[in-house]
Length: 78
Image (cartoon, rainbow, N blue to C red; front, side, top):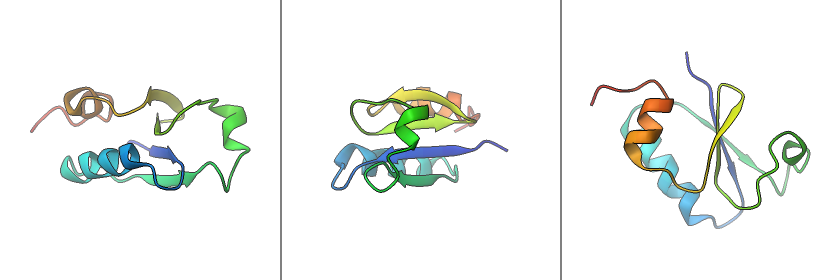
């Protein structure tokens, strides 16, 4: 099973877009507010949100194309 985390900041519209994409492709995810959990930035030093971590690896910074997100999340079928 794939583990997805969205590294977010308050009011991040791109983060909401990524959440909608993941909901659409039926991938469960955790949302981590980096302003409330700044230690996460030591592991994943993003300069802008969203950061998308898949199975412990920072895969995207910013909003990816849906097909790229689908591929990385292992949801190649539509």
